[in-house]
Length: 115
Image (cartoon, rainbow, N blue to C red; front, side, top):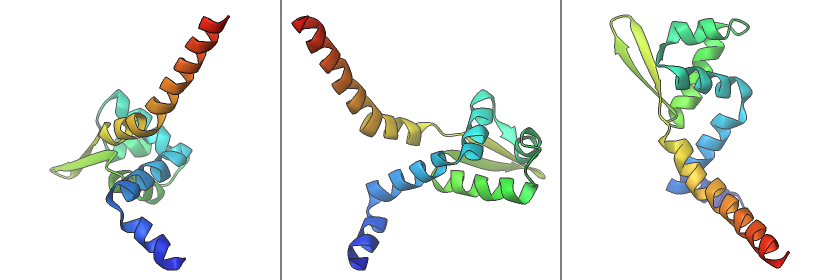
């Protein structure tokens, strides 16, 4: 059983999706992504947007977001500029949400045709 679990962790598609789902599961990280969706921000600006959390905790959450490739950062002098990388969310949508949403639309269309 343990061997099977470890194999799942190394699967390219599964581990990428797992990291994205893990990152999106936390409401603070979703708030960070919402802030970055509005505009790129520095690390300090992200910290200022979440005053109830200390800087170290914000940096830990950013590390999870970067590990899931939802956020990318680059240094500009002493600042670190962060931007949203929406492609992993699109991949999740295309793989999981889009297919289920289409099935629901098809079901509603059939119900409408039967009625």
